[in-house]
Image 1 (tube, helix red, strand yellow):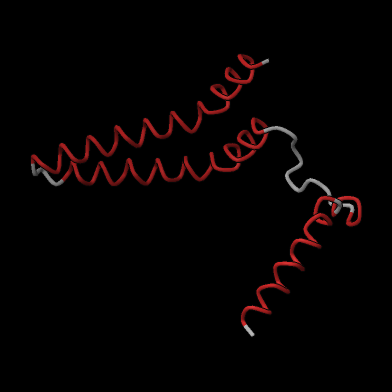
Image 2 (cartoon, one colour; image 1 turned 180 degrees about the horizontal axis):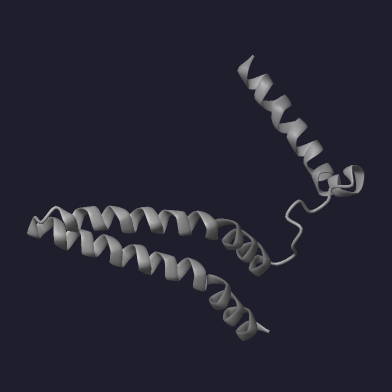
Length: 108
């Protein structure tokens, strides 16, 4: 019985698989991303994430400041590293459109 189900399933798949190539013609599927290149998608995603990144940076700077305020030497070092990495992450997020633009110009 299992063998018969496998054969029927495999043959159905092999017979219907070529129809997937024609699915766009039958369904009228439109591009949901509203962009045609990877660079546009990355720019759209980073533009969407920039406000969230700014909020996370503010929170991480506050966390680092509270770590520094404890007065414990190890916590002071940890707080400085937290603030440093928050600023580095912030710079990366906000420089991404410039970096993508430079890469895009390089490949033109």
